[in-house]
Image (cartoon, rainbow, N blue to C red; front, top):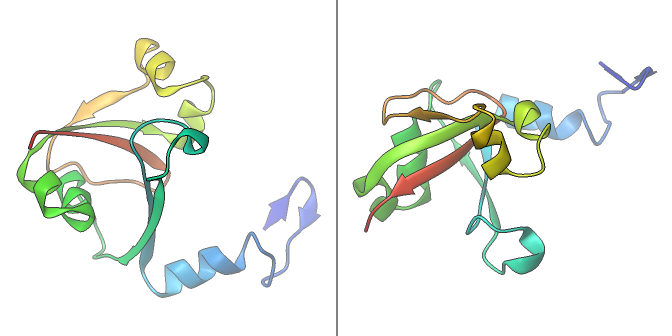
Amino acid sequence: LEDNGKVMGLLSYNVLPLQVMELLHLSLCYTGPGVPPERSQTTKAHAFRQAKELTAVGLASKLHGTIEKGFIRAEVVSAPELLEYPNHVEAKEAGKVRVEGKEYVLNPNDVVLIKWRE
């Protein structure tokens, strides 16, 4: 693996956590109220084991049963595409955010906004 032209060793802080996550079949998910972390006290990181494929509603169920039951849709954009814009709203206006249903299979680096009702 290379990072900016430098070869990274297995014990690199960039490589080792990813290898452990892959070995243990872990997924990492950040949740929050949709505002920047500095304005939120509820932004959390969740690590959980997953089957080979995780669907949008499967992610919702891992976060909270109420979200799974009230699932309406998932708004999805890849992280690299999202980083090209200042925020989610502008990425959506540019047509980079797509609407997916319950059975959408999540991909690595997907940024997902789950719409749900209580």
